[in-house]
Amino acid sequence: MTNTVTERLAQLEEAVRRAGETIARLRDENQRLTRDVARLTDEQTQWLAQVDAILKDIGKLDLD
Image 1 (cartoon, rainbow, N blue to C red):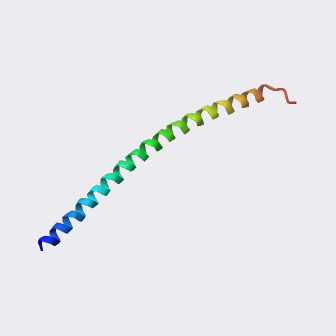
Image 2: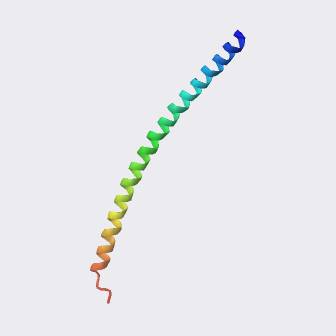
């Protein structure tokens, strides 16, 4: 029975180690994705400003 408990404890310790590694990896991925979202949001804002400026310029043209 002692071997079974020891083996089970070793399995649990390994599972905890793997879970910790997974959590660390997911945190890193979350930080990277958060940076990507911020960058893409900034790019979207810039594109919208450029499109708005183009539309205003088109509106100023006398196309009649």
